[in-house]
Amino acid sequence: MSINNATDANLDALRRIVLLLWGNNVQDDTFRRWTQGFSFSPDEPTALVQFEGGPCVVIAPVQAFILKNIITSRNEDDDWKQADLEDQNNFLVDAFSEILTQAYNGSQYYVIHTRDEEVVDRPVELNYATFHDSLRLSIFSDINEVKAFLRENIGLFRETYGVLLFLYSVLCSRGLETIQNEISGTDEPLIDYSHGYGSQAIINLLITGNAVPHLFNETRDVGGMTLYGIPRQSSIGFLTLLEHLRYCEVGSYLKKPRSSVWVLGSETHLTVLFSFEKRLANSETPADVARRVFSHYDPEGNNFIASDVLGDLLQKLDLFSDNEYVNIMRDRLDGEKLGIILLTSFMDEFFPENERSQQPDVFKVYHYNGQPQSNPDSKVVYHQGTAVLLECDVPCTIESDSLTTCLQTKWPSIDIQWNCTANPSLN
Image 1 (cartoon, rainbow, N blue to C red):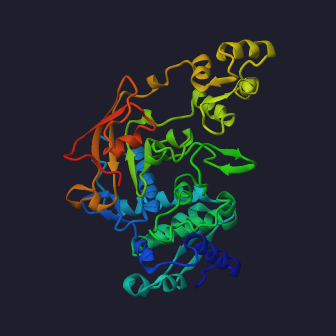
Image 2: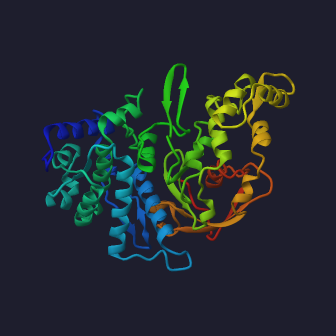
Image 3: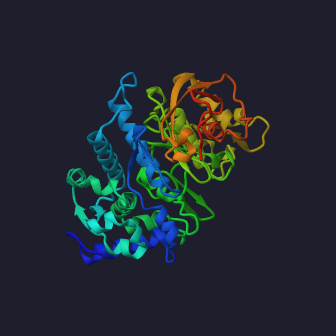
């Protein structure tokens, strides 16, 4: 690896990060699937294209930030889908900068790149070792310097190795020690050896700036071991079909982001749902805070707490917690003397407002899937639909509709009528 204004320690850190990402045994075919740049669809000039399985863990989050910025800066009634080459480059620079800013650990920004034209022009001849021998590091102390460098060199990220260069930049800016602390307890590479799928820690790093392996809010103590989740409300949301299958729990920091953009996860792929309906973007409500604090006393997610911690819970929420009052409320909420208080009973008593009234019952949504083969006519385009929140919660009865099933982990009663012949695919 050649170096640009970097020390031997910086170079060694990059090597160790590459090892953390790939492990010791990298299959050429797995590496090859990751060798693509950030390429926009000829049929949807603001939508990125994914050519092989694996790099969606980088492409989908970048796409989500592009869409967030489009929603912020453009009107849906205008021709918001249009973009020329300069627009596309600006979208990438802004998205990259925002992701790097989130990941920044307070030390330095790193941009990993190569200026070897031979590397760019002859990708077929490169293997894992040859590519990594060509890498350079540029180090910056200010994000404005990073943006200036990216604007001047954005073409490198649109070429064959752009996705990897950007991922390495984010990982290095986060820092090896920080990442190791966040993913503590695992020795597995962050990219799967066999299939090339990226880990949840990479997804979380790109979406939230934290390379944590879990999706629940904040931290949990399980058997004396601290498990790290999402530390704060995210700018971009995340929903996953795996929560419906009870493999994980997604907390409110991801279900209720500050924008109306969600990365969606299936078992093997990432797509994006977004809307121009700004009422879907959430600031954390008192009820959200209450659920989050309640979950600290319910680490296993049983939706109930021991009745004897009610006083502590009320105190944490800055609610009246006089002993006599706590005893009265404990008797009311645990009328059958079972020693537990249900989440629903607690919320109905202390936060009875109807949160549903704060969001629309009908709203327009769009879905993005970057894989051409997952789109009609193999064209990567946005698919528009009308979402309706039904009056009563109903389970998804169509097992083949995995997209709706995924969305029901946030909106249990959602139904969507899509303006296309076939429903969009989560895979």
